[in-house]
Each structure stands twice: as C-alpha cells, then as structure tokens.
Image 1 (tube, rainbow, N blue to C red):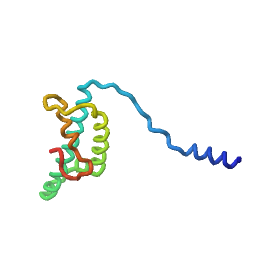
Image 2 (image 1 turned 120 degrees about the horizontal axis):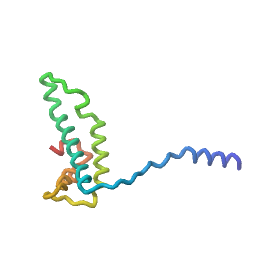
Image 3 (image 1 turned 45 degrees about the vertical axis):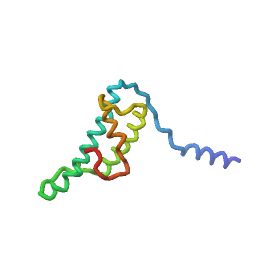
Image 4 (image 1 turned 30 degrees about the vertical axis):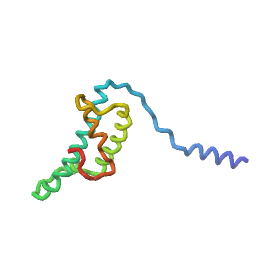
Length: 117
C-alpha cells in the first residue's frame, strides 16, 4: 500500500501545469486592429516568399530574417486560430473595419500557396 501511495504521488507531481488564462477587455476598434495586423504580417511573409527567388537570381541577398522561414508560417497559423476564435461573433462587413475578416475567414492554414496578396 505504501508503494502505491508513493507511485500516485509521483504521478501527480509529473502532471503538467494547466496553461495560464487571462481576461482582457477590448474596444471594438482595438479588436478590429488585430485581424489587420495579422493580414499585414501574412502579406509581408508572402511577399518575401514571392520576391526571394527573383532577388537571389539577380544576386541580391535578402537578410534571412525577412525571408519566409517555417517559424513565420507557424506563427501566422497559430495567430490565425486565435483570431478566428476571438472574432467568431463578428460578421464580415465591407463598409466597416470588419471587412478584413474576409481574409481571415478565407485563409487556409494547410495551404502553402499565396493567399492574401
């Protein structure tokens, strides 16, 4: 019985800590800015992916930080999931700042094709 209690204690100690959660309040305008920032980052990453081969061909070296690295794509995909959840109750409206939701909603995280340019 003593060994069983020790084993249970050890198993309890090895469980991962639950991820911390935070609560924030945003104005609608502040919330509208987040998809815009995501779009700008996505567009910049895709632009670098498009021009890098041409620049390399003519001998111009773009710094590694500005080229499309897997970490950039991963971050854009993770932020996309977060923003989809955060903006789920809002509708695309081309007459307001919510028109950027069109790009957010049409983004396919599994695609490696250019999507937002």
